[in-house]
Length: 121
Image (cartoon, rainbow, N blue to C red; front, side, top):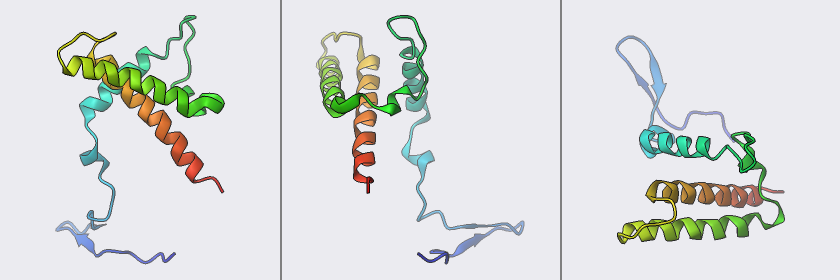
């Protein structure tokens, strides 16, 4: 892989320059700060376990054992069903915010495992 730049730099009046943005990932544009805020609040709320203990914020990244993908997909379906209920004007188990954030959580946990398995040598 070459260390050569793939695009021309941008030069600014004050003398600074930066590489072109077009080839870079634009997380600021791809993500919504209000969605990330709400998701962070959801995750913080769910750090408290049923026994009152506080789990580490990245606890979920360690996986859910051999049945990880099945656990994630079953939970994602429950949260999707709640979202669908809310979308259709019905009450869900815990409301639309819990449904959406629970779905996001399970999709993230599922996809993380898929990506990790894909990158295994």
